[in-house]
Length: 491
Ligand SMILES: *[C@@H]1O[C@H](CO)[C@@H](O)[C@H](O)[C@H]1NC(C)=O
Ligand SMILES: *[C@@H]1O[C@H](CO)[C@@H](O)[C@H](O)[C@H]1NC(C)=O
Ligand SMILES: *[C@@H]1O[C@H](CO)[C@@H](O)[C@H](O)[C@H]1NC(C)=O
Ligand SMILES: [Zn+2]
Image 1 (cartoon, rainbow, N blue to C red):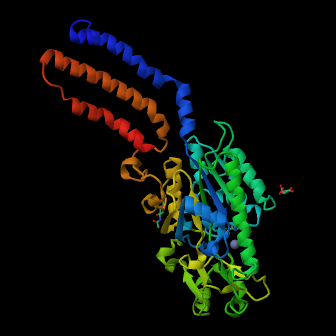
Image 2 (tube, rainbow, N blue to C red; image 1 turned 180 degrees about the vertical axis):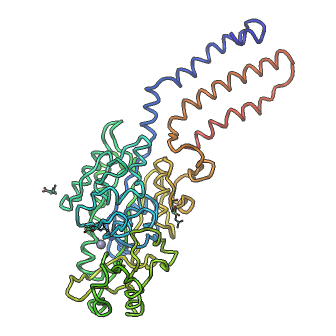
Image 3 (cartoon, helix red, strand yellow; image 1 turned 30 degrees about the horizontal axis):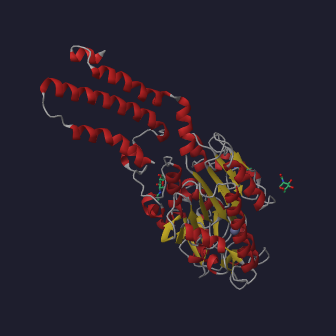
């Protein structure tokens, strides 16, 4: 009707428009089609951690399954993990992109003076949400974006965090076999549309446990490492059998490495300071010391030059590059053993032949990193990355907006098979409300293009008919192509 009014009478164009308009609206208003679109396009990602798998274990014995992932995908030689190089802090960094001082899981054993609570990975204190809620793990963000996640274990994944568990998860139980964990992962990823998970985590306690008991230099470690490669082979096989291998992006990494200890390299605190003066909070090789009321200076003075193989920090002079200072859970005094040394109160305690937790710049502390899948380049070796960069990389692969973090997609985008065209971390995006779901753009863009095209036709028609001048067709089609182009590049 509008065109009739403008043109001063109904023309064939009116009928053309009448035919074209419903085409656009039928595409944009059909909710089922929109739903299908959403289910089809959400990318899949499985993050696997073999605890304590040092970067160079893959060179020590034949590891054909790691090698096949490298050949079909990417490998990173130097992964700088976060200080302290312990299990809980590093696993939480991987799924938050934050240093320990920001995510709040600063050690495997902690004391929070504000809460007056202690945390130990060996007690039920792990299930107290308050320890975890200084950050938001990736599975929660995926679910808030409308996706689903499944955790076949991961530190924190069976804890209620900001009101959520993973959509599917296994309560932590070290006795559940790797094969059973894999079976759950396969079930969750291959569930019907609308139920299948988009992001999964898979955690396995080895080779950490054997590394501690045997020491990484033990020849017995060879069989342990070969065994992990077989486990990876089992996972690959199960993914293939379920038709998931080409769909799911697979990242295989670890929280830290392992270094050899020696019973000759023990630092006994009892030789230097009375136990009554302090509380021992975390374990070797980075020990949090909480001096008793009013004893800070005394304890510090007693320890600072006590042993050449132990570095003693007051909280305010912990080096900046550790990013390990600004949290009440970091103790007033921090003792750091030099590599290979063990801090104990005396020799009576249990002694391990391998350990981690040392300075995160030490090569032995660094984990393995390989990945493959539709998002990754093939047969590509990258020199270095930081483990905090993994989070923005995973968010990009899952097409969700990352929360503020300490990583950078720019540092790792060369791992991707396509160049990221939009970075969710650019300032232009930070002003967009976080709940934007790019999957819902399609109908909006479709309607917009429809309206632009119709108006364009009208304008061109009016110009052609009434002014008899050449239209600026090129300009019009350029404007029209922009939303389409952007939509393509988002994907
Ligand atoms: C901290 O908790 C313990 C019990 O776990 C209690 O004995 C102590 O008084 C509490 N301290 C403060 C300052 O509330
Ligand atoms: C842990 O898993 C083992 C093996 O599946 C099972 O026998 C045991 O009951 C589980 N423990 C708990 C506390 O669920
Ligand atoms: C890490 O990121 C958090 C969140 O953006 C920020 O608050 C913190 O200052 C960052 N830390 C460093 C060392 O940049
Ligand atoms: Zn360990």
